[in-house]
Length: 214
Image (cartoon, rainbow, N blue to C red; front, side):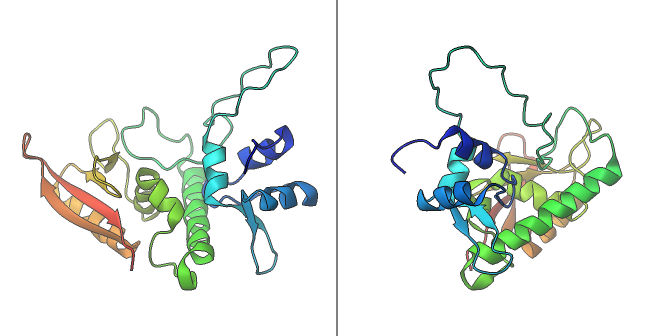
């Protein structure tokens, strides 16, 4: 794309489902995004439109400044807008409703499996897709939370997922070996490779997990 999306196109991109990238908008706007390589139309009914990797990058980037006659009010943070985010462990607050959170997590996981089906070769759902490889921490955390593992809370129990300097790898920490083994089994079922390692300085055990390619 040689120019930034219009304000109307940007609103459609920003409103895309944060996990699947599913879009909602007029036929003209969706067609324009497809022409610019920011969206694609799924070949199967109901022929929904989804963001391409380029569209996801636009969505996650700050909108380019444009001259306006008067300052506009700042947008609300994503969390206030109700955007789903996987819990990586160590968050300050827990969801207000456990039942509502469970529904959100299950819906996000099913959406991710559908994204795998649509974007992986042969429609494979047993291994991570491109979106997961671009959002390693969030993807691993979603797999763990969707399987029922509790994220780390104030008591120190539960998993904690963090980025690492290694390409395509995240670190998963837990309070004990039992937690780490359970997390490793869950990630492997979700299409990841996971192995236990020891942190040289603290001697703490942790998992190093990477998306499986085949």
